[in-house]
Length: 439
Image (cartoon, rainbow, N blue to C red; front, side):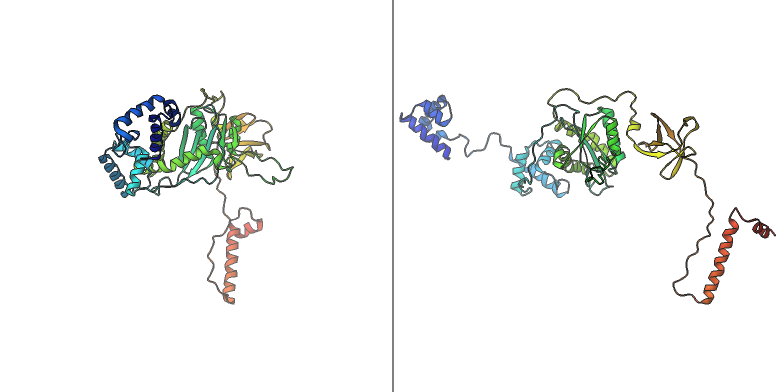
């Protein structure tokens, strides 16, 4: 009999002796007077054991059968030995047992079974640092958390991949994509996919990486010039999307927790389907994992409505989501890009172009365009001109060591011969040299 039962039994005995009323006993035991009368009747019939629960020491009515426990533990041990569930926790294992084998077991029940079987070890959650809680945004599209995760997603089965994700702060709806490099072009491609489907969000929340913020130079000086925006920063300004920088990873904890879950569940899903390439990983991500995430972890916003803004008429996403740099138009109406010359078409030449600075766009499809007075027109690379080579063929040096007088004389003669051979190939020669060479 527990201490609570003894306390209850003492009060009921006081009621039987008429030392206190049933109402007073109900207040002390936090039960109703009617239940006090019912317990008094049971004590007359069964004695002091009436205050104890009838199932104490017996099997629970809702307890799962032993054959279910045996099968679940056996399947977990087999999958763990086969290196399929070796890093599964009770939560994910319970979901897999229900989906693949039809065994519906609660995660805490399965955790207790695995602890008893020695297949799982209890871990204490540690809190290193406490950060203040921030309220979610009220509407869908008000704030978009944006980040990239570096992880061994394919577990050595293929190339190294990066996962770029955008998660809505109000609903946790997520758009993500595997890419080969965490570059400006790949981030702009994902931004384009998002705005084409949902529209322009009000703000984006990122870290202070060099993709989003230019490193300050001489920031301690008061008269230091303002740093120009990055390519992504310029695109966000043209799209009228506010950029907010996070001062710590915990500040954008929603996308960080998404990556934490993905590094656990997504990795195991890719292992299960045997993904080895980026395309296979993206197929599983878009067809299986993201629908599962949005269905299970997404929530309804506090306020109804959509804060996304439609793309304005006349806005060219190809032009906005591109790499833009400044170049100077040469006297022959060409611009230089990556060591090559690009001529301006005769129909696009305007007055006062030569010597002016213009903006050159390298779009996501690798085409080159030029901005001039609110106009954009394409550029085509000049045909490569083959320059004549006047240099003599290179001869490997002799073995190391100090040459003697005969060797030095032979080298001088060979040098004169090579010099004359080069001189003969030169297109401009003095008249006396041409006459002598031609007899």
